[in-house]
Length: 337
Length: 120
Image (cartoon, rainbow over all chains, first blue to last red):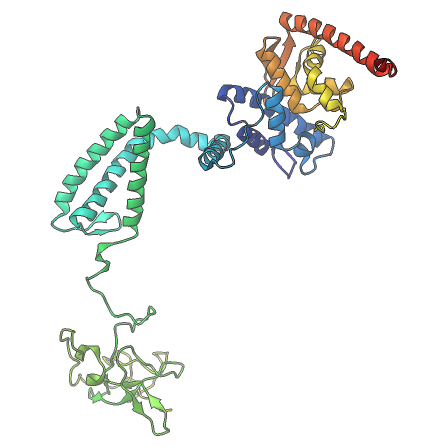
């Protein structure tokens, strides 16, 4: 039976009436709602066949679900809808919660989940034990971790043994707590909440964030990130000095690191002069271990096959070609402006 | 469907509240019916203001009080329908209620039709 109402579907109407009757005994409520489902189907069919399948047909005919529920409960001999206590936040919250759960019960997907969920319980117990063990080990024993996994080091075996004990305890508690009620049940819920919050905190952090190979990052994911100096050799393998580098758009290439500033004849400032060498390369700065130095010279290039000019292809030169196209036969790496 | 409470105004909704039990028992006296069916019978009999929810609630309450029997009839399309029928308790209640109503109605008739007498 399809509803042509766009205002509110029979299912929604039913769910809202159910929510408004949430405080009635379950059996009585279901009896009342059992009739209502058939009733809504009848009303919907009637308005549809009469061509009155207008929006809000159900509400126009029957009033709002809340009004319907109020009329229903009074005529069925129950008191009027209990008014939520103005100051009682807890009372209002629990009322809202029971309305929500009543609305959820309407959904087949939720009912399937409810039927399936108990099978997941032992899995949750194991997970809870593991997370609790990890949280305790990180907090009190300084275990290093990456998210919710421990780091592989000497303490790992000890942690695993500890985790096994805590998991066993968690499963034991899980089996016992099925029968808990009142305060002890609330305590188990609180413990679960603490474990989940701690796990979220652990998952978003990692102890190796500090230390390790912290690096210099001048922003951007450029392949030049780790390059802060350029050594240029000509076709004979001889080192060039005071080379100005430009990219394919003609912009000066200024690498990160301390700048080596020179002045051009036209008065402009040149920051793209390489090699910086002792002026700015991080390999020369203190606090860094000495690194490999560029060689004083490299083997010369073989002559190009068709013509005699030097080709950049296969060149050991670390300097970027001023043209973006490697096939273009540009013999020099130092364009002039 | 929503009567104005107080203010001395009399509307059918207010009156219906007191006699709906009797009206419902009366329309199932001769034939069983499901909820919406009974709503229609009441409206056809002239009680146009009767609220759907009130009828359903009343049916449920009369059933709980043992005045009605109920049975479910499966439907090919849509949800099954719950039929209500009157039983001996209901019939006795109907006879009782009819007497009460007739006496009450006579009194009211008398009261509203003889404007000069209550002052005497």
